[in-house]
Image (tube, rainbow, N blue to C red; front, side):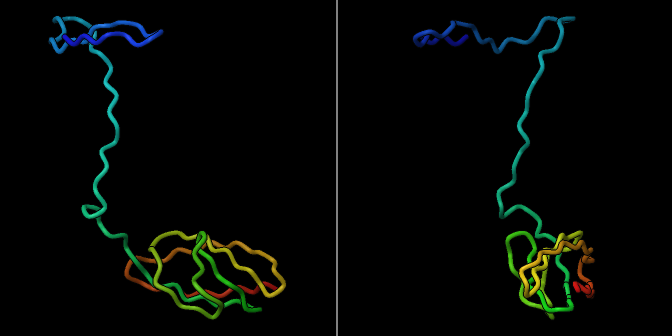
Length: 111
């Protein structure tokens, strides 16, 4: 049993590490997801994205610029949402799927 003096306006309670009586309803336990340190995580699969647009455009994945078309970049494998900004400042969104260890080559006509 653990006793601590109550803080102003706090309630007093008891904590017990005793096992529950047989037949008693089990208490709910809330567990936080266990996080692994960054060094224990598996590296994400990578692939190559080669993209061209007409007219040229700046290509972004999230906030990261991967360059101006035509461009080839090493990216995370999987489904990616691209943001394409043409010379007039118009913004286009396209989705591509890059295979792990592979290459996705694509082009978009933005005219």
